[in-house]
Amino acid sequence: MDESSPSIGISDEIIFENDPGKTQIKKNNSNVSSTSITKPTIN
Image 1 (tube, rainbow, N blue to C red):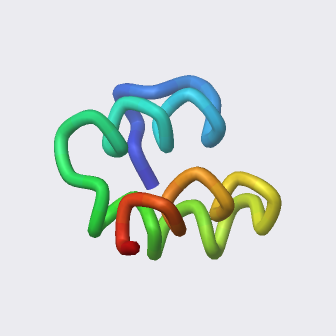
Image 2: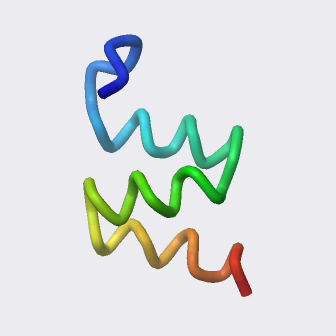
């Protein structure tokens, strides 16, 4: 999805800093375990 980022995992972290809400959706598709990072942000 992001051509600027060579790896999906790295691109997720970058988006997480910009907008946690968007990262939740992207991490959910890319890595389920990574979603645990966004859960505390929602709560």
